[in-house]
Length: 196
Image (tube, rainbow, N blue to C red; front, side):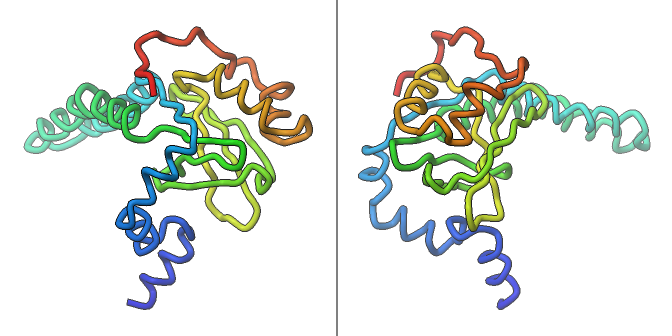
């Protein structure tokens, strides 16, 4: 039991199950989120990224024995069609980025919730994961990084708030103003995004 506790403590202070349960059980979630602006993710980039993860299963089906080939093809087809669409819809609806002038809340690569104060951000790196662009936000005293998506429904609105909230020499604002690669340029915002 002790190694499991150590692992959970190492994995992330905010990700510890007991802390997460207290946060949701006491009803603090609704009150805290009311003070934050909500920025939802666009459906298509995340859904395409998840659907692309079904391609390796199709490759395995080509070299698999005849008896299990159909199983791998079914898994691949589900991941590319249903799994990608389901994952994209769930993330777009239930896992938005939330921010105010004090902090930003998002997710790690594996989906754990993270909250980072703007003044604790040390560095920002650009990362493209299949069809989606992210900023990897590293903060002081944390081993895990926040994956901040660059495909928000209200991306321009989010960046306007960043300019208002952060100093010009802040790493995130400096990236958005000066260091943004050409592949991370804004596209027109779709009208199909739900309003928050």
